[in-house]
Length: 162
Picture: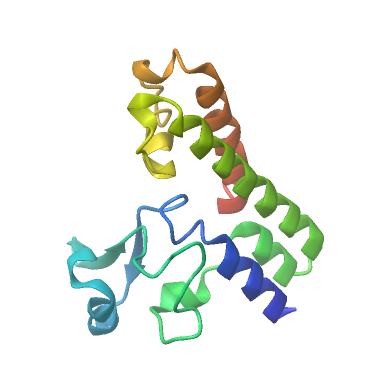
């Protein structure tokens, strides 16, 4: 089961590509490891350290999944995968939620690529157009706007929030 969960995780990558999170926390003792990855991506706030997303080792999937990575990378599982681990859900249910989110993300990026102002936006930049309040410039682009709202509800299931 753990191998199947890891494969789903590795191929999804929404926690690594900036879709779910803009940064990942790291422990101070891991700084050298993360700096090996990309020293420019380290940030510090109030004594806590983070590395920025998207991760430089994410290219459609994690390219260093089998290597030594920061603790957060080896321990984080999204809510659907955690529920499978805890026996609260079936693997196929988790796969379905994640597959739906990936499909939405892909559709959003295709729609955005056809709109001059949004054609170079990442998914995280697009989400900022509707979070926490809707940016006026997205309102004329109804299909994109509505798709992003739908995507937010799917992401809430993945993150495990309401």
